[in-house]
Amino acid sequence: MARERRLAVAAVVILLLAGVAAVAVPGALAEPEEEVVRPGPVRIGEVPVAPGQISGQTAELRLLARVDHYDNPTRNVSVRFRAFDAESGLLVDEQRVSVGTIRGDRSVQVNGSLRVEREGGYVLETTIFREGEVVDQQSRRVSGMGALVPPYARSPVRFADGTALPPLAVSVADAGENRSTLQVTASLTNGGDEASGDLRVEFVLRQADSNLRAATTTESVGTIRPGRTGEADAELTVPNGYNYYVDAVLYRDGVVIDTARSVANLDPTETISADETQRDVEFQVEDFEADDETDDRQPAGESTPAPTTSTGGPGLGVTVAAVALLAVAGLAGIVRRRRGDR
Image (tube, one colour):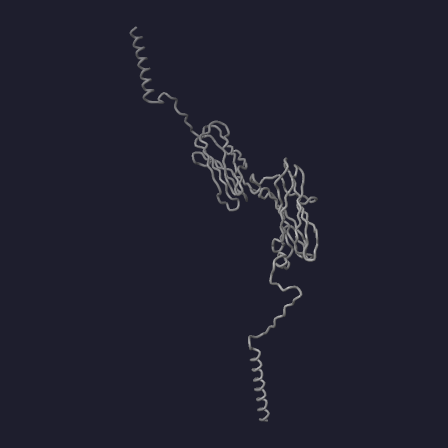
């Protein structure tokens, strides 16, 4: 009986000591931390790129990286996204995202965002780090950034694009002796699901060799239903004897939506296409002056006397004549002396 009592007292003492140790040393009875001998492999799977917020000058590129992990836990994982200019190789933007610890066989999505100029092309680099050390890297190239249109410039209406229905049709409405009136018709197609509105087209005629603006006008565009094609017409008067580029600019609320170009060949000695000129021609600025402007040109019917010119300076003609007379007199004296000697 005494033995049993001693064992019970000993058990109570052990329990009391364990309780005191647990209070005095937190974690003394906890299970030891999992010891990682070798971190599991971590790799970059795929990195799709999607457009984000688009402004007039820059574009946001969203990178959706998939990080694949296997086996043992991997601590202190991070992903770095960088954008380089494709031509110069200069760093444009950079972002680093901390992932932390990855456990188990699974994939983790890591999202990044880079902002670049809305032009040219870029090389997008994705790098994964483990404990500050590079373990995997992937690059891809993107181009055609100018095709990313900001929301304020988006419109389903565009100039028609076809052979049977060209974006711009040019014809002569009235052919005068010195000036001709051209009729320009723009064809516009609504490729959206709603009727268009608040559109206008600016027509500009430029002399091909000088790029001088010869005539311009703006016309409003009526409502164009979805899937339909509408027209905008204008008449512009320009001097004869020159070739012209015919430009049309489509606006919506002051924002350029689309552009188109054609040509008007009024010079019988040459022709031009919409993107090249065969040769230069003589250009007279006065042909493009406004009719109501005055200048100092000679009125019609009056002639200007031809100016007299001289090959020498002032008084040089008299001097030359005197020298010539002296030379003749000297020569005559020499001849007389020779005759007297005979």
